[in-house]
Length: 305
Image (cartoon, rainbow, N blue to C red; front, top):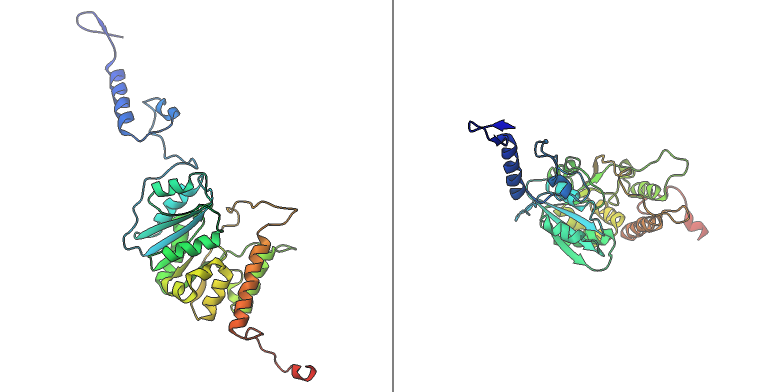
């Protein structure tokens, strides 16, 4: 304790200043957890929270967007804030459209508070149907699709947007899925088989089934937003109608994709997605011929008919 000239003790000025500074910061700063409020006032300023529920500052939708980011969600409260933050960062003129279908955990409210345009549906629609609906509402000349449960950095999605800006109609993630196994997943095989059938073997397993991917306004009009509900079919339509479809950038989504619930050792979505590819092949055969424009060479089948 210090003594004044009168001999009376007085408190150190440093402690008084610290308390005042602490009160001022508490009054002007955003609300934080009780643990943060009780931290020592002399400690270093806390870093931005990395909690899954940490909410970034509200962004503003561009009135004339170049890029529309479509995000279908079902109960993605833990990740949606970070997904939206990255979505707004892909281009300076961006709108973010969140299609909340069957969500009951407040995901839609979080998305709306962050500046996203939220389309509400009380029942689950399926992610692909959500993408179709979001594309219908999109204003941008580029539409980028991603999911609400995988946080992909904006820098990884920008090459897809840039490719479309430079003339590509459908810019695909070149992630192929694991192929170096004895038993390759049926979805991976279906993606490769469809691209071979469409005479685009160089695409390998690149697919509109895989996020993220981006399409031009021209592609959206040529394919029809409603066909995006079956991504492989949309890809077949795009290729058949002469659109520029390319695998432009590798984004690892296999390890970051949440593990799907398994039933008796099988992926419950495998049958659904393989069926989508069969539907795409059916459309292509109807649009071309019974052999999908593949040659019959010298086989004289009419003799045995």
